[in-house]
Image (tube, rainbow, N blue to C red; front, side, top):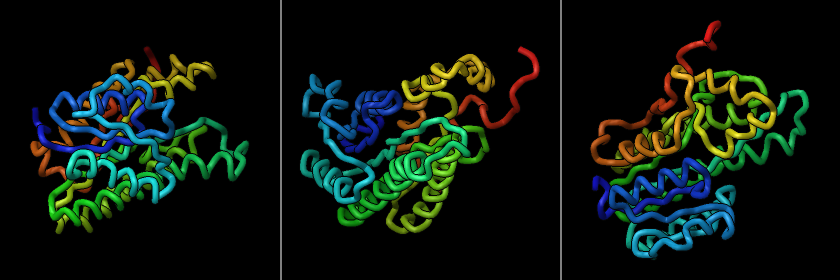
Length: 253
């Protein structure tokens, strides 16, 4: 129970990784505000008791809604200790087939602006409380790697890595840690887009052990990073990718 008496906000709560993070944080004793874009997407939490979990509908691309999300968490649980900026989207498409608006702005607004707004709102709340805090951002191995068909996604995640570093530096005097976790191929509904275009088996082999990472494995890393056991980890992105970024696609196997 490493997180007992801690309050956390998790955005992207309806996604595969978000669900796993929330389950793990609650298992570790945290009270959690689960945030997603619609009431419908949050229905999976309808049967949970409100003592340890609440839900909130917010569009993370709107700063006022992100501020309201933070206020609600404090109203319900008394304070805020952990912000997990997990909301993210992606859609594979060749660069030269892009619509500059439809294929760039929506992904950038969620993956980049949403993280920025979460950092800002949580940082201000921690400052107002006069307490330490942890901000954890979901990044990707693609923040550091080029790949076909994911131009906007890669650019947005590179921004997340730099926001993590810069925010950690500025917030350090307030005893606020900021770090990120870089995922590889995680078996979630978002990844299943590649099954539809015939690339499922191909991308599986991009993992060193040729198996997709499970959302629960990412949640284990997140739970550690937001705990006091990870107090010395700050201003960096931790890879949780089964070595994805450290080798080229094998010639054999």
